[in-house]
Image (cartoon, rainbow, N blue to C red):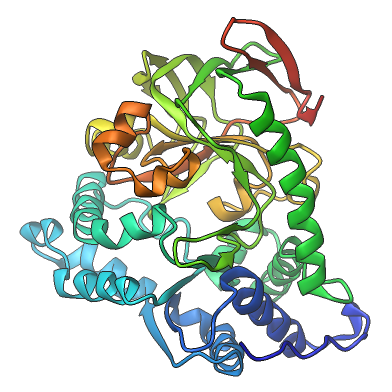
Length: 424
């Protein structure tokens, strides 16, 4: 791999917007993907992300990429489908494209996604059509996503501001100012505002790894989340032979990558049958263009048996009915309330950011890498360990400065793990 050009020691505030964007592209390629010489990249983005896409392409080719293939999405084109397409169209997807992406990943192409589409794009559209389209897309893309969830390849997600997203985060600002403010928030959260962002990411990753090692040495049997106001009292059993992860990790192709830019979490695999109690979301969930607010759920023996939301309830119920595993957990993650993203005071309406501001749980597919030797196990073997299987993987936030967490060992002894949102 070619060498990384040293970052010019210039105060971040003195950099032009283009220079800041180039730093984010550098981190996406060198830290997020850790792109290897001769690799391809399959890059998904919105048309609004063109300036960032072009800088990522430059950085990728400088790093030795053979080819950068970009798949663009357009909000207006997506919305047109829901307004005018025939009903039968929502059970259809471009299987040929999903097959091609899966083949690219089998050939060791890296995956990079730029998030930032309009979180409220499909507000007011038929939840049934949204659910059907998502199911069709998930079924088609399952072979590709299996390679991602098993970390067979190096992959990463970064963010780019768009006008529609910015106006949701900063509703009282003029559009141009809102976009500028959102970019600055993205730059700060993505840790590109220091003298050497690549080194800063190495240091940050090392700090997360210390916490991961602590959790793995503890070998907790379960976690109990309980809030000061009593709205949450949830016991999350952990899968047999679970492993905690966080920050970066080595993929099946031998490449060390950071899947999320930014990231603040330590996460592992829950046991799909050992989750009990009630939980209230601490932040809204933006899912596939629908906003779901004030989620409250009750679990029995791993499965959601009651689900309510003050907005987007039908979308929530469609989500957990996608398949058998959609109403069970595939991930549990711990994030301190002192996370820089939480301390920004912003609600990003974007899971990549909001999940790194709060401890969270995820409905659906578990990560095979969060079990000992999980990458080499069959789906049946993973399920036997308690790992969930589903077409979906949707994170929602439950942590706050009011949340407490106990670690519980196999004998039932509890010890404080987090108090009022901070590590105990």
